[in-house]
Length: 185
Image 1 (cartoon, rainbow, N blue to C red):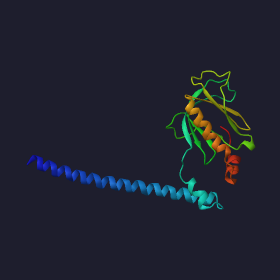
Image 2: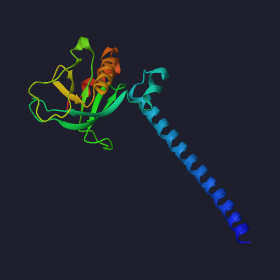
Image 3: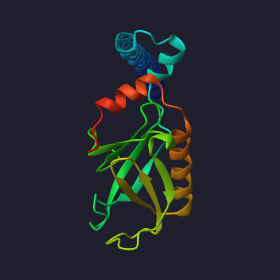
């Protein structure tokens, strides 16, 4: 009798759990769609001449590359600090954070095009202090040179490839607007 009662209670519990999970998933989907709709409405206001074909990819964020690199300061004599980087190819920004779970970035670098004075290349700085990693790259902007170090050659190659992909893409009118509003942090 005990096993029969236990079996019935277990089935009822599983049924209730399934109903709860289904309701929770519905709630998540509803919120997800509401956020997407709000973002789409914002984009339509921000870019009134933008077509759906241009705006729909901007609704969600799909970062081209993310991971840890070491970064030095503006004079390139400061010690390197490990930072979490995200390459947002839609907004042409390389964002960096203290850690991978941080909500607010410490800074951002606008990635323009080569004809506007932006470049990326492999490099190992000679006067670098404190860096443990040996696979370097440099992002050059009209305002500044940024030096980064990757832990492995594979990471370095992936970052170089991703950054070059953004550099090679022509800038849209929205990119020029974004660049005017952008300040290097």
